[in-house]
Length: 100
Figure 1 (cartoon, rainbow, N blue to C red):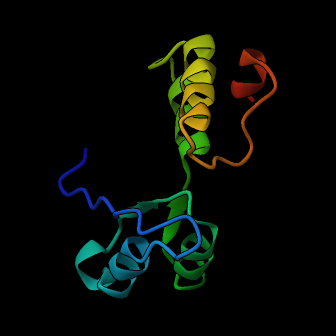
Figure 2 (figure 1 turned 120 degrees about the horizontal axis):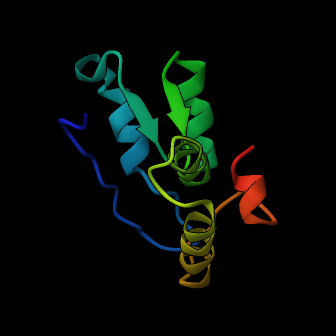
Figure 3 (figure 1 turned 45 degrees about the horizontal axis):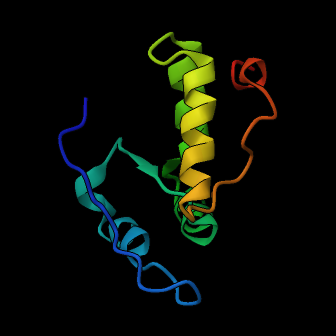
């Protein structure tokens, strides 16, 4: 259950997105939480501080495996996100691969 959601703003393609870093730095209020970010640097930073980190592809994989989202639809959504400019790592080559 999500009780708080932090949505960082995109500053620009070349500048770092600082929203995820801000969340990690104020983590005392997020004990036991999961940071969902596609920002590799922020993810590594959080992981080094003992925070569980997930990315968009990982969340979609969990949703498909649990049956919340059909695997084909999940992969299509990931591809659509990528086409709008989102930089996602590890998009599976097929819907079946999303289930692994």
